Image (cartoon, rainbow, N blue to C red; front, side):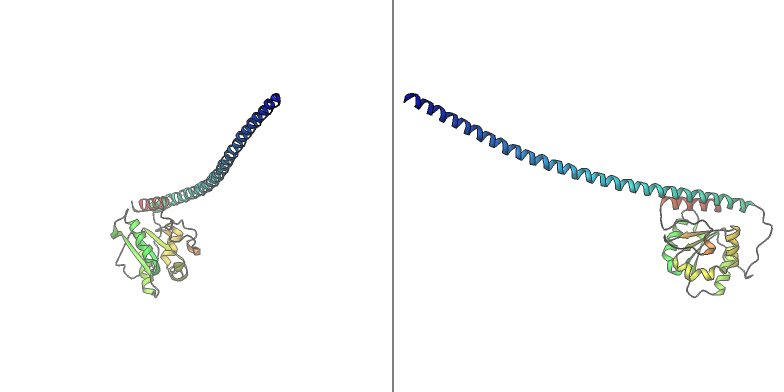
Length: 245
């Protein structure tokens, strides 16, 4: 009997030990489960961060590509403008063989060096552009020509005479100017001759990005005033420097 009691006691001790070990294993299992969940969350967070970084990198690459394309386009415009200016300087220095006839022999009261032509609807853009020009040229050498709704033949004749004595003509091109003003403006003989002879130089100024130039202005190199960026300001400065010096 005594021996059986001892064996029973040993078995009970073993059972308690096994239960303790089971409790420890169960606790370890819970801990491992929590750690696994935490690791899974960290993994998901890393995946999200990686996806976000890849998206941002693609966006940056596309933006850089567009900026490079714009830079190449601006460089081409500047090279084209430079070539045009060199041609203009050569034409100005060449001797004049034949004097152009006047449409209207009436005397010209004002003889500005620069004419800035725009529709009355674009007066605000006209004033802003003149401020850019006045950074390089004194104000008294600039005359703005505002095309009103009721343009008269007398106004067109006077403006055409002023074109004949000017060195540089800026034309601010907008949809309104093309549709309403150009049919009358294009009738001025001295302006038509200037577009062909480049003397004086006629420079269209694009004040909105999607405007379609009329036939008479499509061959002239324009200034991208609507961008208001460094390339526009540099091109404007070169035009004024070459013509006014």
